[in-house]
Image (tube, rainbow, N blue to C red):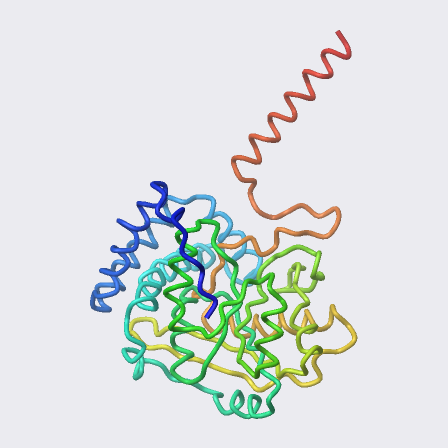
Length: 331
């Protein structure tokens, strides 16, 4: 469901590299044996680690802030492994899009499925909260081996890539819900669907509050508590992790959160962040630490990330313009 309509604009020359190179390459990579995929993914991750300095610095900052008990050497090793896991996940994305679902039948172990089945039997829908693990596309494919699931996602800016991703995910998700489409999300819950929702990114404070995440104040969306109140849906946590070597996966579903939500939005956001943190710590380098999770700061507190080159350029231009204006005002 939720098919993105095809338009002739998608065949524009600017999208040809995606149609003629990227998509065929992803298809071919999905047919490689796992040991080769793992080696290729490791190499690709290390290449990205050395080439894309901005992402590396952002990841280093996140790791340093969230694991202050570890040494500088441990921070460096974790940062590098985050990129290795991310590189492997690119191959897993190819698998999620093109491998038969049955391929993974004996490659995943699930714990806590009975919690979800009991909750769904109540007929109120299930809000399944998780985090952005590096192999996030494959997580959905693993889940449908056991139950139907919808997903909430952020559309791609590239129209051709958005079209391809939505079409290829049709075999995985019943509904693919734009993160701004609350009406469809509520509809899914009222139809007793299981909706996989990831509330672990920084969308500012327009629809969120500050709550600690790994001990750091982070802008945290409050939509899970509002959604629960609308339909009295069960709210549960889900975690995925990959075996360090083998092509084997583990899926954990927790019992429904009790006494949630409360009348305190900050307390509820703090609780969700704490639950996510506990799960992320089970396999910390398989989490997407690339994002600027702490970019929104309390008033008067500086953002912890290095400034992007374009921001430095903008500040320099502003400073030069101010200097010129001052010279004109005081000849």
